[in-house]
Length: 399
Image (cartoon, rainbow, N blue to C red):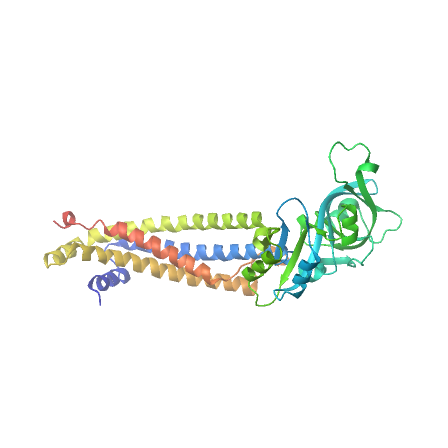
């Protein structure tokens, strides 16, 4: 067994003759345990909140989306559509037209996005499961499916034949709008369904059939805003993107789910880093106590160190004794804190003791990467703290 490690192990697991050193060492160890446990629990909670937040966007966003490189729309040729149909990279794809529009109902107005979709839309995006009232769109009709937020703002009901929901879309062109009758395309709409996903989406979108949306926007039948894709099983994202770029060379840009919600992902990643740094600071403060405990141990063991030094032990080996001691305390404290943290997370997952609302438990996710992050943090910071403390062993101290 390594000589410095053998002595360090005895120092780490045996009580000192000085009560103050024992107390400081206990406080340092307790701080490391609590810090490791808190860091793991918070990372697990944040993983749960992240998954909970992304569940709304992931439930409605496609695997991949293509948009035009320039302008608002692009054209798809018959050859390109045939290539998409025969491609084995996608199980389904849906063509979409989207633009902001003004909706008018019973002297109330609301600006939202009119989204023209084809029959494959709910198969690609899974939007049908969020329909909580009414029915999805019938083909070749003026029916619309509106968000619950828009429905509340306009006091809009289903299949109201007595009061007409109207949509106004500006005609392409430039200059001041003088006469709404001439400068807007408009159409009467019939509400066939209401969906509910999240507050933001519920107040943002109204869905209608593709032909009606293209007509309001003066689009040609093969003119689209974007195309959404559902990847086939066992197909990698990179392979699918490569296929799309071959079909639409220098015509479109491809976005995955993260890129479609880049602001949300950036916010979540920034918050994750901030939380990690805050709780890492707690561990650093606890390790200051470890530094103090090791330095006091060095002073207490000064006579023993002199004896070892006079017997021929080099200074670097004497330093390693306390370097190993600090590492042992920090690693064992980190492991014990992790075990406690894992128990807390598993209990919350199993029994849902902490609730956000009466029906919604605080989300936590057990992830192996969080264990590695905590262990890495404890090992690195514990080594630095032990290195600082062990550097006080010098020839001058022993003379």
